[in-house]
Length: 402
Image 1: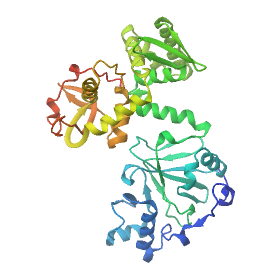
Image 2 (image 1 turned 120 degrees about the horizontal axis):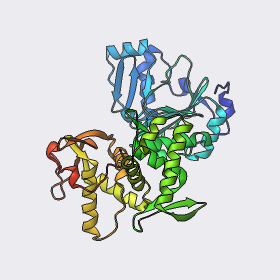
Image 3 (image 1 turned 60 degrees about the vertical axis):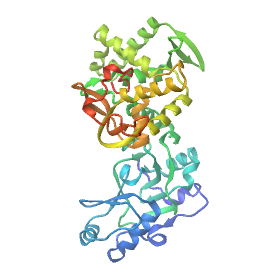
Image 4 (image 1 turned 45 degrees about the horizontal axis):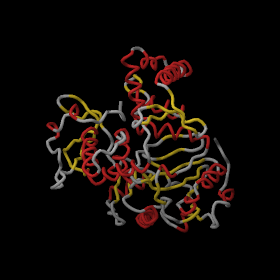
């Protein structure tokens, strides 16, 4: 999508006027002797920690004060600096549009962003914000580009301008509303973050496809009644296991033919593999309230802590939660929230899931550098990572990660 739009076309976004950052906020054009002043102003605008990519240098700025070395000044003079998005810059992200009308539609869907940093340079509009602990990368959508990990070049020969000299708002990915053309892609991205990619090493990931089927066909599982239901026009209707199996079989078969991915048929190749797909569906489609998710996420924040050299599996975390729940409310039904663990841990601690945590000589899904606190002392409960509790002795399925 190419546009010759000018800043004047987005005047309806806020009541202010577009300001030339090269004048009003020195810092977004490279003029060498004044460089320290310009970058200092940029730091004041975006906050710290902030990471800048300058040629081959990656400069991490933990505080508003930056130390200027001869090598750093030379690097600035040779290459346009870029802002590094994501964790190095405290969750900073930028959404890039090349059409002012699309930017207007996006702001209309998300009024909170009117008060955030909005910038423009010829041909590109940016909305800046911060996501706290969200597992997001960088990817292209139909209407925009999402910069969650890569670098954005804003120091340029042509000055960038800003709608408002405001700091990026702090929000969450789940709070952002997307343009209709991008909504399907965003849903699929969230699905991959929760359950893993559609294919691993060329083979289909049963939990991803079970989650996709559950979402697109409106399937939920009630573990108390041990029945599957289908949500149709806001009505919940029970569905037999035989009918569900037929639906799932035809869904996978039809999709494999539609996208010409015969490898998908591996999910149907034997009764054992199809049974695994059904078990995955049961895990991802379990019906539970958002309140229960909140309790589990709060437990993770309090029960886990960063600890260098320690590993913890998802099963160990889930077992600790089950024990905790049984202590405070014995006999209460506990819905299976283990598939949500990876996303919740990333949001809370910024720690990505690993599929190679060793327990009893076998690779398990879990986290490196994360420990469970001991209930009484607060010390890591699994300091001896290789001799931690065996996953076979726990109740949690490895459902979120295949």
